[in-house]
Image (cartoon, rainbow, N blue to C red; front, side, top):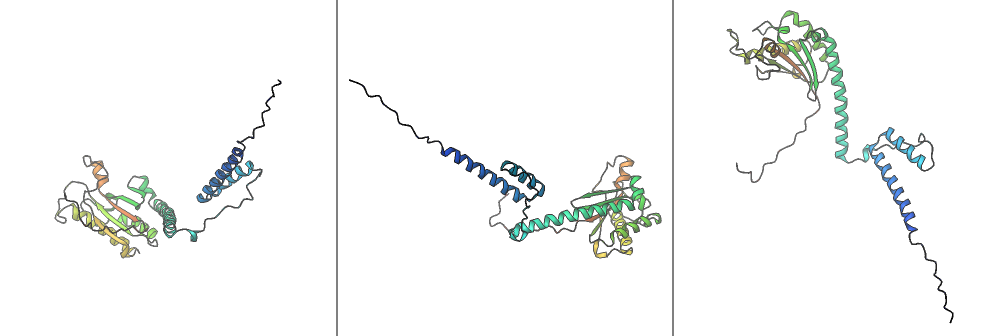
Length: 258
């Protein structure tokens, strides 16, 4: 008896869906990459990305691709406020740097001699002037030779909106004369002398503040004459005009016991 030969039927290929799925995942990945680039709102990066994607999908140039602009009005209020503060901080930082450069031009010779130091920080621009440039030892009256440079500083700052904090500093050696009972009084009166000169030179008094710090904030060691000479100084701090962030601290219902 002849045995029938079994003919196997062709089997369907059940893996063809993987090709479409892979294409979909690739397009989805490209979509999210583009969305990330748009959210960054960086024109150069966007054009590079658009060019790469254009090459991948048959487009040779990204010059005609419009750069997306993020509408500020569409942002949440907190994000708009944060963005505005960041922009204000950048603009003021640039303005403060310009002010610092103007002061360096005015006080250039003293800076080269190491008698004046101009620095910049987030708090503002600081001008540290050695006390021997402004005062005779143990005295609070401004030396006539210092008036010209202080008036030049006042002329540079009088039209600026920033407030000025003038602080007097001494070394640790106790003062021994009949005018001042301690270095606290000497440092405070020296700061007041500079404030009075700046006010007389056109800076609004409401912008000025005099502080006496005695020897509480040294910038050098007091064990050498060179260090003590550096510590005897007057600092003019041009304060940043950006508003401080003030947050009220709520009273705890059950404060922890010590």
